[in-house]
Image (cartoon, rainbow, N blue to C red; front, side, top):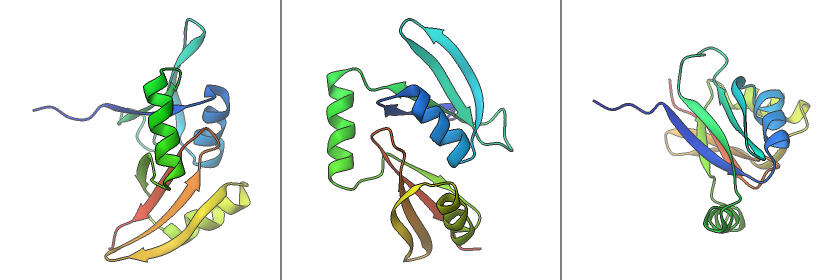
Length: 130
């Protein structure tokens, strides 16, 4: 059966994206390989080096850029990641200078918050009930 091994977010600046996804969100660098004028740039969860990779993909294709801009303009997150404690994640992200778009908010059985990744995307973090 298939499994998800990689997914991507389109970013307008790969270097800035790498800084945000590693230094702010806490992902770990997996691959950073030159690919023409861009890079094959992936990150993984720090506790799961062989887990699902997130490709920080350049948004150079007009359709990708339009899609990302439309999602951002409408306040729709481009991706969601699970955190164990949303309130702790909120405090840590604030201390790292993240732009919090929506603070932790109860949404039915989950708590969610939204941050701006500085590269054209809104990212949702969520905590499921124990």
